[in-house]
Length: 302
Image (cartoon, rainbow, N blue to C red; front, side):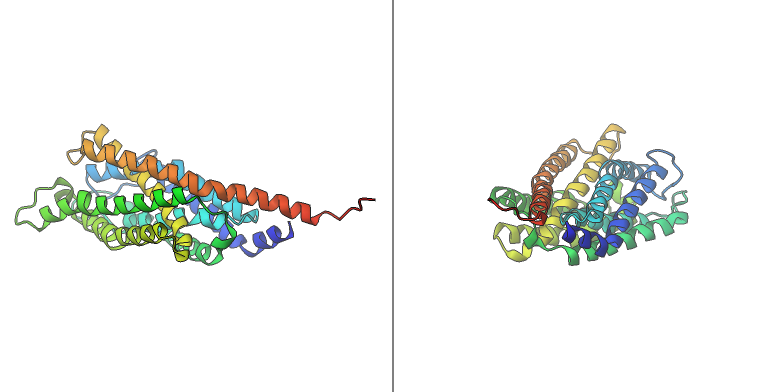
């Protein structure tokens, strides 16, 4: 148990940052259009529906997962940093978009007044991502089965292809035309280009690289696998929530095919996350039992 105590003492800042990040994520979701409508974004009604879906995921998944990871770190559980990577990279992705997107000249709102909150969450997410990455020793964690690794590897490649060809390419072709017709592009061009840049410039290459590394069993892929699994589950749930809200509100940009696809991706991603993170908890429990046994004084058989 002494090693767990040392781990908790050394990384108390990480645990506290995770809990603070989780509370901040819940605060943004509650203050947004989902509940109290205090934050009003400078976006169209369609983009607001997307924010609603993201807020649902933040409140139900991102915030609790962050707090849970923080508690694990403060308890000295070595699986905590692995669990923390998903919310951290999700925060870097999502709160950068909320801080930068919007068109103040076209839509009313007050989101700029909450820039400090987005900035705080972005900085916390960056600190958590870097610190968790440094602290995490993948060799100390229970390994996932080859079946789960192969499933995640192929799933990552499928998602990368779908994002590129199925989701973003049609919108880009329309935007490059002389007379664009996409309602998403015409209503929120800033949001459109920010999402395209981050997805095609960061998300797709990262998923493809990690997916190939995991499929080939490369040792370097173990650590980024934990980040990609958590991030994919959280973002997949967020996007699925956006699609459901858009479908339910009759948004002209909604498509039943996309809603089904995003929902399927979210369910599969959450299932993979459970399979990957589940052994971490069991490993920690077994490690604690082993530490307890080793700490007991030896007794004579005579």
